[in-house]
Length: 148
Image 1: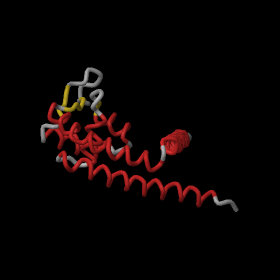
Image 2: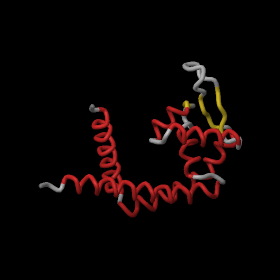
Image 3: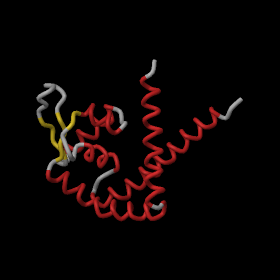
Image 4: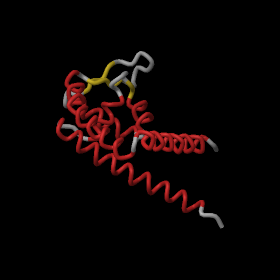
């Protein structure tokens, strides 16, 4: 008997803990801008280009329904707006408003400061190694998910 099941459990539990830790950090960074981590996540997905709700969900690994709820809230608060989608009449594109971009801009200084502290803690090579390992794990899960 190998320890393969324990390795999978360990990877999953470490990922869940890491997700919780990142969400806690993100909540702390977003709060002074009057946002939540989830609002920041959805708005951040459309900073470079507008996307439909389903596209945001795919990119961010969230449920379409959860993104829809947050997108509607962002629109209601004037932080984002829906635009027509030339590729699909019913799936409108979400894009940030000037107020949404200003809210994100308020988060940037704290984000940069925390990034500096984290990279100092891990070292630049260590941070790159962590990032590479996470990408490899995510790619492996994508490949396995695509298999019947």
